[in-house]
Image (cartoon, rainbow, N blue to C red; front, top):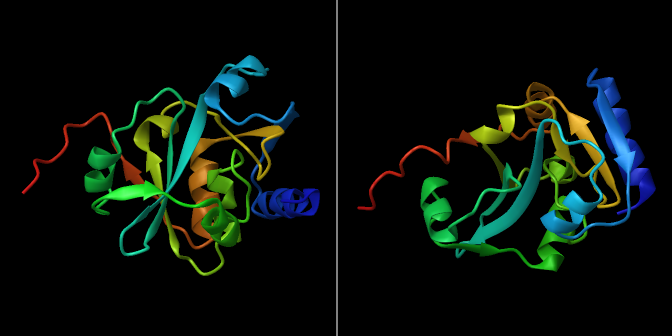
Length: 171
C-alpha cells in the first residue's frame, strides 16, 4: 500500500463530505501494539478479520478490538459455514493492503465487489470508529454513520450483526 492510495482514500472521503481525524504512529500489527501507541481513547477501536469459506467467498468482519471471536459461531452467523483466514496474497489482491493494515476502508479497493463487509453492531454504538486508513502507521477516526455511508458508496452494503444476541441454534 502506498501513500498515494491513502491519499486517494482521503480524497474519496472528502468528496463524500465525510470528516475524519487521522493520527500518525509507529506501525502496529496487533491490538496490543495499537493500544500501546493510542492517543485517543474515545469511541470504538476495531480489529478486522478477512475470512473465506471453502467455496472461496470472502468476508471482511469488523469487530470491537476487545471482542473474543469463535470462528465456527461467526461463520454460522454470517451464513458462510466454516471460515478460515484468507492468505496474504488474497488480502493484497482483493483489499490492496498488507497484513496488519486490514480495515473497513479497504472496501474501496475491492472494485469487483467480491468481499462482503460485516460490521459488529457494537462498533456503531460509540462514535467515532477508529481504523487504519489502508496502512498500519496511521489511525483514522470516522463517525459510524459515515463509515456505513462510505461503504455503501464503494458498492458494499454492510451487514450489521449483533454478536451480543444469542446465536440461532444449528440445524
